[in-house]
Structures are given as C-alpha cells and as structure tokens.
Image (tube, rainbow, N blue to C red; front, side, top):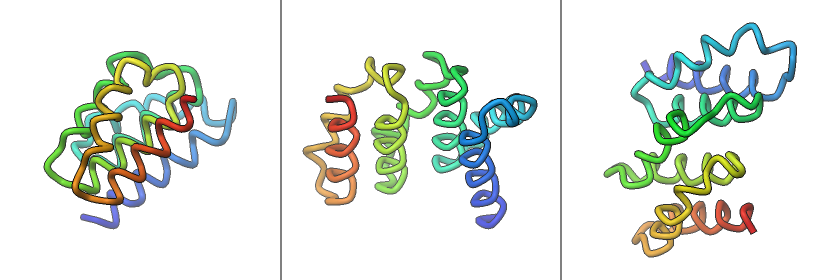
Length: 118
C-alpha cells in the first residue's frame, strides 16, 4: 500500500543519516532497490551512497526514472541525482535533458540537482 511504500522510503532516508549505527541495516536498504517504487528506490540509493555503498548498478536503478512517464518519478530521480555526488556524474546529461520538461516541478528538480554538481 502507499503507507508501506512511504514507510520504506522514510526508513531508507533515516538510515542514510545515521552513520555507523545504520551499517547493520544496509543489506535491507539495498533490497529496497528492487522495490519497484521510485520513492523507495531513490531513497535507498541515496542512503547507500551516504555510506559509500552505491556503485554504478545502484545509481542506474535511479537513473531509469529520469525518463519515466510519471512526472513525480522524474522529480524524485532528479533529486536523488543531486544527492548522489560523483556517482551521478554519468547521468548528468539525462538530468540536463529534464530541464526541457513541460512539468515545472521536474525542471526545478533538474536545475537544483545540476546546481549541486557545480
């Protein structure tokens, strides 16, 4: 349900902020990359990155949402790309393409993400 999805995304986000204390839960966070929901997968990838555990495969899971039909999925992906640091570098071209989006929220998220990358 939506509530379960929201809880999973929030849990991933919280675990991304808790340093070593969260290390024991990173396998569960990594499992959320297979969730099939943009908000959960993006939150999981960012959390893993904060622990130095997000590689190309994990970032690619998020990057797929940059071209998703749902505008909110594109917003979430852009926001995640802004938080992923150097790991997002191969996908910044796709983020830049979002600047031409019809939806203003997607354009704003893309602009903010690119701004975080200098």
